[in-house]
Amino acid sequence: MDIINKICKDQGIIVKGFSEEIARDICKSLTKGDVRGKAYAIRVTDEGQDINAIFYDDTAPMQMQRSQLAHEVGHIMLGHLYEHCPLSSEQCETEAMIFDAVFIALMLFAQYGGFNNRS
Image (cartoon, rainbow, N blue to C red; front, side, top):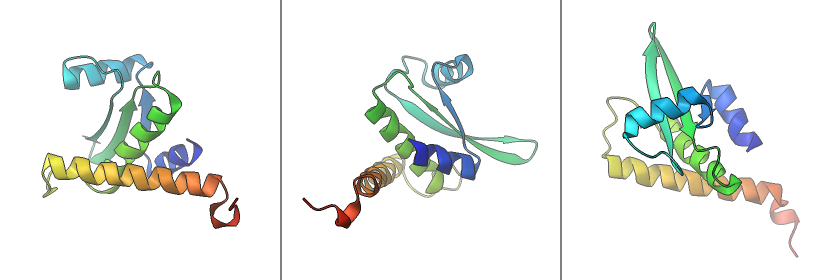
């Protein structure tokens, strides 16, 4: 999770877990229901400045949290939150899933020594 948190910090992305009341309340208002096992990326404009935020289920297992965050970072990095994004929501979800899978694979590859650690 360290690399995901570093990316978010470097990109100015606010990350909040649902255990924080503000995150839980915002996401419940967005979904009008249960937020367990889910995550959301949103973009808001405050005084002319765009702010990206990710809200995620911090009570989920660590692997799910990692995947949720990578998926939502993907939405932000791929430009899906801009109003002029030409992709359908299905295309955006597919791209974010691919981003998540590749990101996690590369993270695991680096963590376990890459090509230098063949057993």
